[in-house]
Length: 394
Image: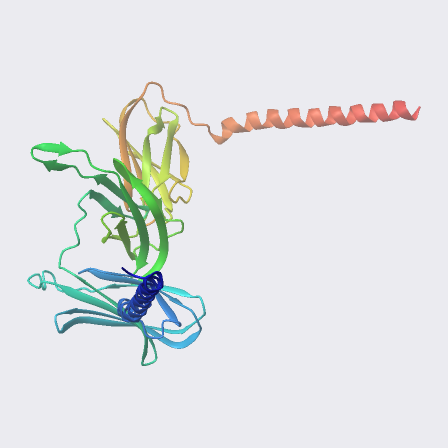
C-alpha cells in the first residue's frame, strides 16, 4: 500500500522529469536549427545584399540582387562548372550601388553546340562581391536538358519587331488505356527584352490560370532601333510541380507594314489603299500602284504614306485621271525609303470610259466664276451694312 504523501511525491518527480525532458529537447532543437538555416542560406554578410532570384540552365543564367545599403565597388560573378571543371566564368562590374537598388543580369553561357551532353550534371553559381569580399552567394545544379513540365506544353514562344507571344496548353495523360482530363495549372510569366545582355524591358504576370489553352501577346511599348539584334527571354514558373523553365527568341528589328486587303478600292478615278503598322520600327515610305494594260505603256503612281508604328493605320489616296479605256493588271506595293517591298497586293481594273484630265485652261473659268461670285457676295453684305447704318443714324 502506497501512502498519500509518498504518492504525491512520485507525481511531482514525474512532472519534474517530463518538464526537464521537454526543456532539454527544445534546447537541442534550437542548437540544431541554427546550422541548418545557415547551410540553406549560403550567405556571407546577408545584411548587405539579398539574392532575390537565381535561375540557370545549360543556355543561360538570370539573377536579381537587391542591395540593402550603399556600396562602392560591387561586382556579380557567374560561374558554370561540371564536377571540378569550370566551364565558364563571367564578371559584371557594377561599381557604386544605392541602398534599396535592385539589379538584374542575364548571362548566356554560349557553350559549343552539343558540348557536354555526356555530362550528368552542371552547377551554376553567383557571387555578389564588394571588392574582393564575397557578400553572398548561391548555387544550383541541373542536368543538360531543361526540366520537363509534365502537365504543360509550350506550343509556341516567338518575338519580332512588334511583339512577343506565347501559347501554352495543358497536356493529357494516358493511364491504363484511358485518357485522363488534364488538371488546371497555375503559372508565373517573366518576360524580358534584351539587347545583348542589357535588359531594356521587363514584364511579369503572376498566378495565371491555365485551364485549356492560354495565349498572351505583349506589344513592345517603345520604339526599336532598325537593324539591331534583340533577344526575348521568357521564364515560366509552374506552381505544381515547382519548376522554372526558360525560352528565348531572337530577332532583328526592321520596318513592317501590312496592306489591308479588305480596305482597298480601285476604280477608273484612282485607288484608296489602307496600310497598318506592324512594327515598333517606324515605317517611312510610299505606296506605289502599277497599272499594266494588255496593250500599251505601264503607268506608275506613288503617294507618300504617314509614318506608321504598330497599331496605327493610314489610308493613302492616289488619283489617275486620263487612264485610257481597257483592262489593267493592278499591283500595289508598300516600300520603305530604301526601295524594299514590305508588302504587296494584286487586283484587276476595267476602265470603260477614261476620265478626262482637268487642264489649267479648264480650271480658269471655273475659278473666275467662283471668285466673281465671292466678290459680289462680299460687296452685297458690305452694302447692306452701310444702308442699315444710315437708317440707324436717322
